[in-house]
Image (cartoon, rainbow, N blue to C red; front, side):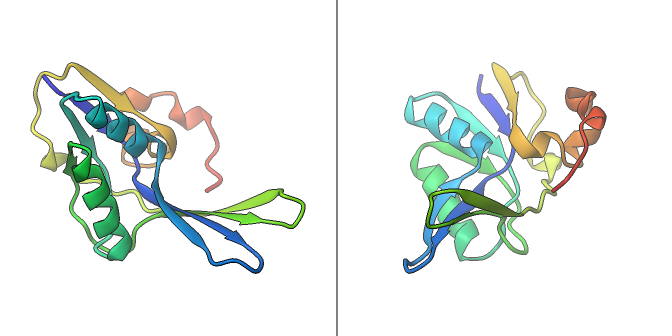
Length: 141
């Protein structure tokens, strides 16, 4: 039986004056799936990525770590940008898209299901019974 992780895979961008932007794969649920895959667990990730360079990079990164990814790449990949000021403080900008296709995942017996991070509070996961308390948390994305 495999572990199903549901949540975002995105690109983290760190920006600071005078230096080129740094890009890296991210998203808390994607990192959970990646860690499980690297530990040798049978893991699948239901996520939403774009059909752009960032999406291709994320998919390759996850698959190299033995994660079976369920996604139908379209549009732009989500990003999380940290804007660093000279004093080291940061401001954050998110460009999020969350519209996974749950039909890509066969229903079955899972050893565990992990739903995480921002995806748990954005539709369609927000409306699911797994996230029944999400309506109590205001959305400010």
